[in-house]
Image (tube, rainbow, N blue to C red; front, side, top):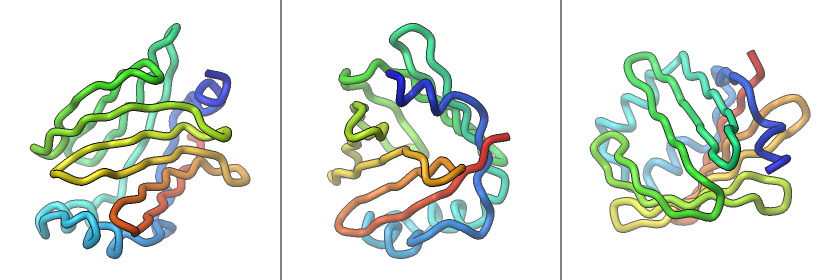
Length: 136
């Protein structure tokens, strides 16, 4: 849990530093409408908090927000952009790692530090996307 606690706080996505979005979105077979919405997002923040054994990740977009609350190692479901997702998060090699089953596909997310930035790396179907965040 120490790894997750070190990530607590509010983080703002660094505009222009996303890597691999188009390749990842294509590999994940995202509908063009979702790709376009993602391309237009310029004000994304991520708030991470811990309360006992419960972790909350609140991601705020310009027109909506997504809140995930979970215990490490326990499977949970949520719906995002009208897509049902089954998730489980664990700490592995100093990273917060999520495994996500959605639209008949499996994806992995990793949250970790690179210098002074929080990296959110998403991998699925052989493609990887990285978003970089700085602490607010």
